Structure formats: C-alpha cells, structure tokens
Length: 232
Ligand SMILES: [Zn+2]
Image (tube, rainbow, N blue to C red):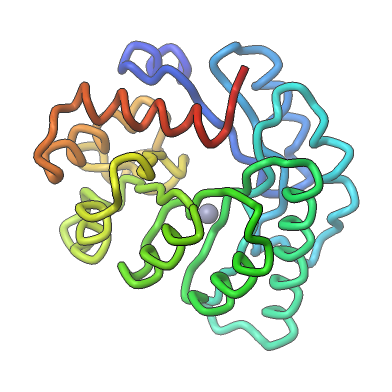
C-alpha cells in the first residue's frame, strides 16, 4: 500500500493536506488511522467560492497540525471578482491560524505581491510556501517573515532552473520537501501518480544539488517539520 511504500522509502511522517470540504472526512480518517499521518484543514484558492464555515470546528481535531492549504492562484486568467474571493478566503484562514496558533500552508502562483501583502498582515503567523515555483526574490521576502519554503518534485524537472535556483539558496533550517501528490512525481517517476514514497527521490536530488549528504538533509528537513508543525 501507499503508506507502506513510503515507510520502506524512509519517509517517517506524512501531512495529508485538505483542499475542500468534500474530502475533509477522508483526510481526518487517514490521520486518525495512522500514527505517522497528520492532517491540515483548509480551502484551496481554486475552491475559494465554497463555504469556509466548516474549517474552524475541525481545527481542534487532535490530528490537525495546520490551517490550509490556502493562498492565491492567479495562473489562469481569473476575474477581479475571483481574485477578491481568493484574497478573502486566504485572509480568513490567516485569521484562523492566528486565533488557533497553528501554522499556515500557503499555495501561491502568479500572485507574489498580493500573497506577501496578506502574509504581512499577520506577522505572528508562521507557515510554509508549499510547492514553491516563484522567484528567489519572493522566497527571500517570505524567509524574512519567518516562513519556510517547501520544494516539490518539480525541482527534478529539466526546465525548472528557477526552482533549483531557489532550492540551492534556501537556508537549510527553513527547507521542507513535499510531494504535492498526486501531481508532480519527481524524476525518475515523472508522469506517474505521485505518492509519499517518491519524496525520497526529491530529497536525493536536493542533497546532490546542495552538495550535502542525503542523511543530513533528511534529518534537517524532518527536524524542520517538527519545529514548524509540532506533531506530538
Ligand atoms: Zn498547492
């Protein structure tokens, strides 16, 4: 099974990400059933028009470590009305993160200035920019705000030099690694459905890119996860 393959590949902890209300019970059930799986609760920018009322009640679930994923995605030509809705949903989830003292998982694409502006409204909130594909300039500003940068399998793709540029420079104590499963399987499994076991391939690639050992990188990114998300 997927989880056993992850464990065999050396993946010690999984964080199962919520993106919409429809599947939150599946997310929480997975985390309830497995000691090495945790959960987040939130609404993805693509679903920002949906209800947000259900989020807060689920934040007290004992397996929930974070709010999100939330954020802004302007990749496809979207209307000003849709952008505003995304901003309101992101702002609301930042407020929940602040209120419940939980870190936030931020999705951002083609929306650098607006994302940073909203993050800057809540300086006490910690979090991560997940599946990072934006500029080093944005990464630097997020790092200054105390955020972590999470690198997905994209870093192994031939045309992803901008992601490699960021992945080389993020301070090791602020670096996280993720799958963004089921999308973006890293080389050598590119094109397949992604799954947690493949994060080991991304880690190996990153260790070589940063000229460090896989064991050192794995130990540090696991420690970073524990510092930010505080599983217990
Ligand atoms: Zn995302």
